[in-house]
Image (tube, rainbow, N blue to C red; front, side, top):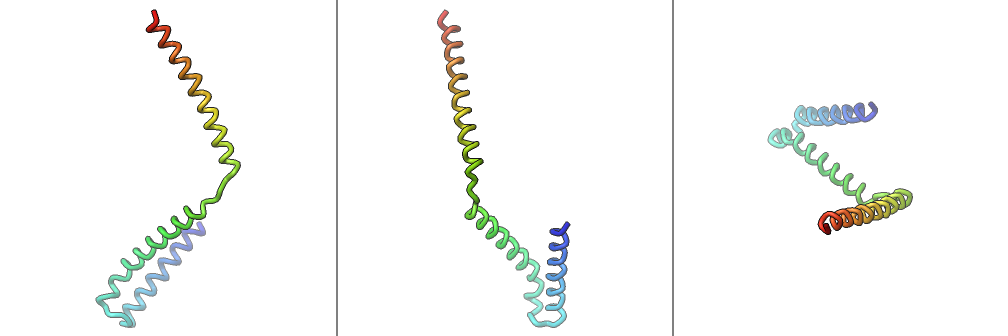
Length: 96
C-alpha cells in the first residue's frame, strides 16, 4: 500500500510540474507536450539502472551454494544409477 501511495504522489507531482510549465510558459509549448514522454524514458532508464546495480551487487549466498552443490551431487549419483540400470536392461533385452 505504501508503494501505491508513493507512485500516486510521484505522478501527481509530475502532473503538477507539467501543468505549471504549461501555465507559466516557462518552456516553449512545442517542448512541454513532450515532457510526459521524457519522464517515461527517464523512468525506464532509472529502472534499467536499478536492475543493473542489483545484478552487479548480487549478494553471495554460501548456504544456498552448498545446498545447490549437494543437490548436484545427488542428481549425479541418481543419474549414474539410472544410466547403469538402463544399460543393464538394454543389455538383457538385446542380449537374448
